[in-house]
Image (cartoon, rainbow over all chains, first blue to last red; front, side, top):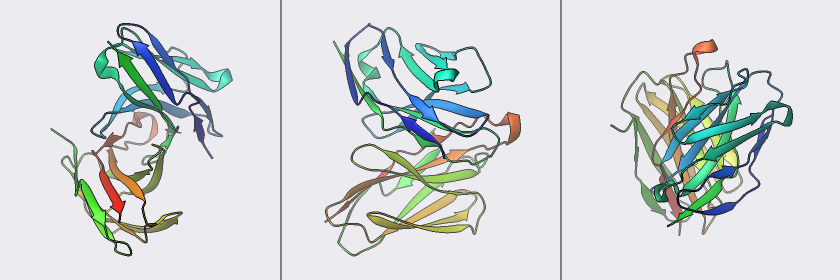
Length: 116
Length: 119
């Protein structure tokens, strides 16, 4: 069974700074996907970035990047130059790679508040 | 254009009554449809994944019973029953291309969710 843990329940940062959100996971699968999603105030869950477990290089999309440390089963999300609109709840999630339709296992979420 | 449309977005549920939720897929190229539940503490939990019209599954969790039905290639339904009094629950549907193998990105797209509150 897979398990995802986000220990930070909330973070508050000043606008234009860099923030890192932590996530650790457990799985028996040899290949897996790791994701970060954010949930906006309207409730919509939006995909941000993905890391394939078999890739060593950290994924980067816009001002989102990942710190993937496979030996530590850790996948941190780094947001640079934060903006007010980055305020949301951020979820770390994982799933197995090869099974189409496999479920996504989520962490408990980290609420990010970006202050002006 | 939103890929998934959910209705109703919010419903007050009289105690003891069941409620039916619908999720409409706007692009049939994302055939793997799922339901997730979310509690007030924001914890998201997978409920079901149904691929083909006619597929049905049931599940009982603490606080509610669920029946999911894949009605058509573009419609997924969820019946929620026996919700605990005073409980608030969010149900969100998702869709995925599910190409399988190394072509699978694993990325899910989510609807905006339905909020259920039991009186």
